[in-house]
Image (cartoon, rainbow, N blue to C red; front, side, top):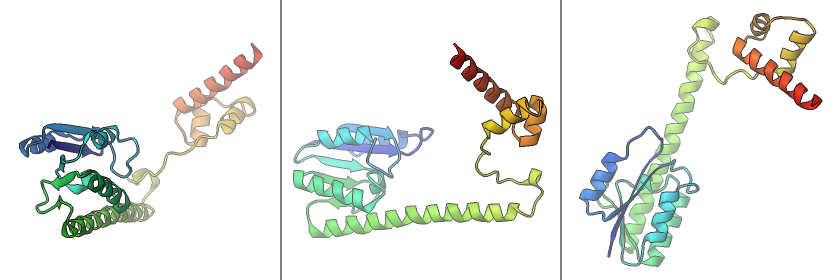
Length: 201
């Protein structure tokens, strides 16, 4: 029997060290680790490698069950696959979270995953509520004092060319009229000239 571990963080600037150290201390003989979102199973090459590596009698350990998956559907699919292959599972930071084939462990794991999924959805709702509140508060302020900038303004390339070729405006005047940066104006004009040259060659 081998003890195989999996560690995961969602962002590239997050650190895996603490997870890996805990897993090694818990007896992990091999650790699969990656920096990928847990919202989906796709694109998680290290987790796919772990699934291919484990054999009957092996035990998979993680710090928490949400390192494995963030949705109930994904988690149940993984647990079902491990049960069929005779693979055990243990979350070392969550006492009592063990897959040992018993109906009690199945129930406990599913309940815990349901709570984890609920927490994820609640966190997203709070983020959306926070953004909405910030936008509403900013509406009463002058534009230059607003802290919520929203999505970047899209640039109308045709408008830039019209102002340049028809109204004969300079880059600064175009930037002011369209409320965009001069660098964006120069970039669009250069792209337009490049296309004309490419067509004429």
